[in-house]
Length: 332
Image 1 (cartoon, rainbow, N blue to C red):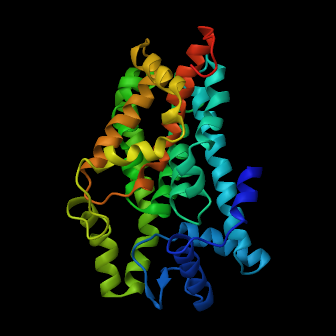
Image 2 (cartoon, rainbow, N blue to C red; image 1 turned 45 degrees about the horizontal axis):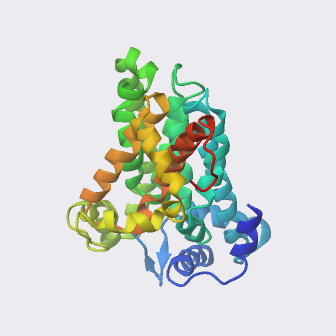
């Protein structure tokens, strides 16, 4: 966190990414229009407002400036590390080294660290995804999940980045009986309570969508309700890529661990080892989610940032096994 605090104040906000988010937050603040995001004087349908509201909350206390938005991103990033560690602790209760290693491995992903210094939406989305998964595993994977917390976390994710939040958490929920003992024992309650939680999260989103759509005008309403969801999935008007595109850019996301031989050994240990709740959950999360994002028309490298926490846990699990096996060389 200290390194992030130092780094984030070394340069100005990155053009396009940070400057656009700050510009929208400022236009909303300056116009007193806090319901509908505004960009260049017109309603801005590309983003939902939670990040802007968090910026406004800090401005209301300390005044307008770029210090609070930058500090906010660092705090959100710290929250991501803490939630990733907590999730690893619950998924691997008999392997405490997994929880110890996970935040360090996650923080060291070069792309995620640099992108997390920008005032953008993906870090906040990652926080919501990890909060939802923590609620889904609950205090212990043998006990009932925190479905109310799951609903609130999914709702926050929907208000952070829109319906894409559902894609990040859908498969751990839908495939719950494959990895969660409580879901395997009581699948009816798992799907019933979890389905109600998802409906509740969508209802919270609608509490903003409906008045915003009415206030933003016809063009904003059409873009918000249709182009920003179905348009991105079927034939993206923005960031359209072929289905195989993520395979070509994932190596960028995995640096520097992609270049470390022991990381490959760790992955091999996880893939060939005995499956457990932790590895089962990570498999049900990372693999189908990656395939689903490949099938969606719109693609960007940072769309997969929330899944890097899961990759860090996979590496931590494998490295923990190597520690118990007393690998002689630190490098190999």
